[in-house]
Length: 270
Image 1 (cartoon, rainbow, N blue to C red):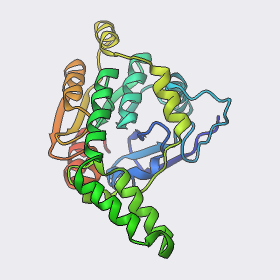
Image 2 (cartoon, one colour):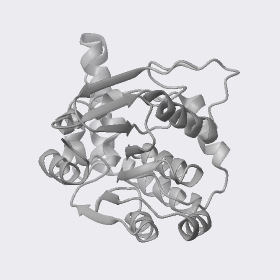
Image 3 (tube, rainbow, N blue to C red):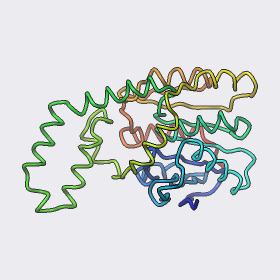
């Protein structure tokens, strides 16, 4: 399975895990690249997304994603990885830690997907509630009636994308600053299906009793549709520093300067 990779900067290496599942690293840019001062960032498109397409018969469940990350560690010739995971990438980083507890040097989790299926259900309900808000519905109706689709298809696509992700933001007008991306539905469905009715808390406790936990940071927006209670619980399990920002699900877009400052202080640099 060939994975598309991109490396930027120089210095201690940080592997950046994008969200989705089934998305690509592009929508973390350009903001995440601001962290490439005094360190190098290693991005890759996870299997079944972006420029790492997977054939129909290639498995794309969570275990394959964890195995890919372990393969990257071996390929980079590193004993241990510093990992920065965003959204689903945060959950992938946690799954990697639970499978390979001796291979993680440092862990930064930004708006991580929740550690139980129940928290994930709460997110889906909250996101649906936000997307049904009258002001978003008004904007969608206005776009449909605007004739923009015929006049300027590219501008129409861009606006339709913004409105499709509006519920992730504290102020949905900020969606215009998020780099557009696509999610491969098959990959997304396969990952969540492979996790089933999951609850990672017992594994955490078991792992923590046998291995020292790496220094960890959790960043979560107080207006994120993903329940902040899940990240508070995760931070406690990891004995991590928790930074709560007054934003939605995209701190890199909604509070770029503070996002960069928070991560820059935590991640290793030359």
